[in-house]
Image (cartoon, rainbow, N blue to C red; front, top):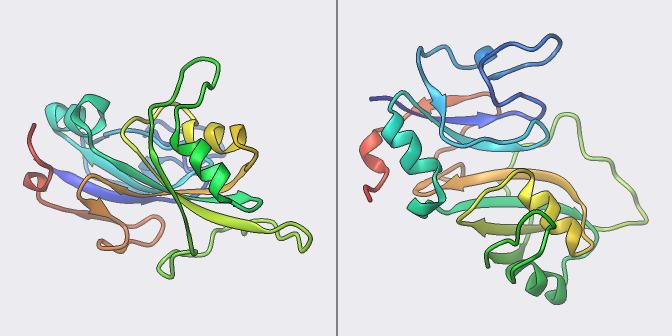
Length: 187
């Protein structure tokens, strides 16, 4: 049974099937019969777990199993206490209401790689970083949450899933490593 940590680069599609003019997981991962346990949209970067074991894939990806996921988010504007409080409370996003989460303002992590291409720089508008911990993960949820509190997302990096973190398993974008599947706690 394989369990692979992969640092998905910006603009890479979270699929193995090719799409003309776009990079996909197949351009980086050559192990046969592995599948992502969860997804990241093309505009997001960071940690993905892939496995060849369907039960393990379900255990990692399904919200019932409570594998916390931490997202580092660079937002357009200042993340003050009021915005953080709103992020932590349930937010009605129209098609669903988010579950309570943990959100805290952080300094940009020193281990974080520069994004390619870089984020636009506007001297007149500050940015700030937030760490958001979710137990769920719906389509573009973090981006929609930050926009709902007036802080559009500029950069989104998933830094950890359960016991795995890019701060303790340093991988540059496009790099991967195999880890023991036993490291995922059984439920």
